[in-house]
Length: 158
Image (cartoon, rainbow, N blue to C red; front, side):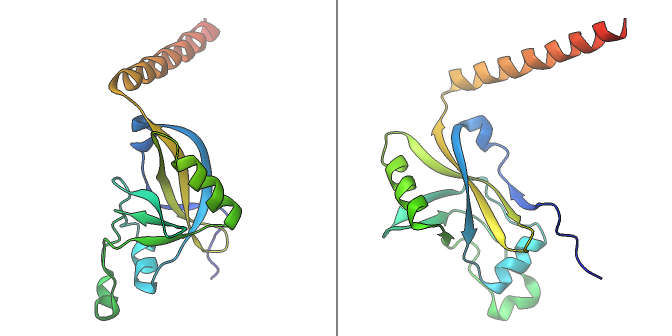
């Protein structure tokens, strides 16, 4: 029986990133993983809540991502917290190096998923950190939009 790969299947999401950071742009990067890491990722046990991407030696790496060990492959296993290489095109690398050299800009992984070909991909966000005041303003605006939608919906039913 063939697997249904028509939709992106999320293995890990960083939901807090959109709250803590102001995301200006997103891009997709491949991940260089070991076999046991892919198995662990397919089980959905990966954590990217504290992860970030940074440049080292002209390449981008994913730091602080936790891929727990896959028990059946423990003998050939991997180190759960090791840095993982992000696979990007040269043009994307130069664009990201320019973006991260600006003050306060960081690369945050938003999600890790499997594409339609079954390859592990990481969605990166070019982000700027929010202060507490900005977070409160965003919450206030989101609540107001929710209330607006509720008012419009209730008036339509009258």
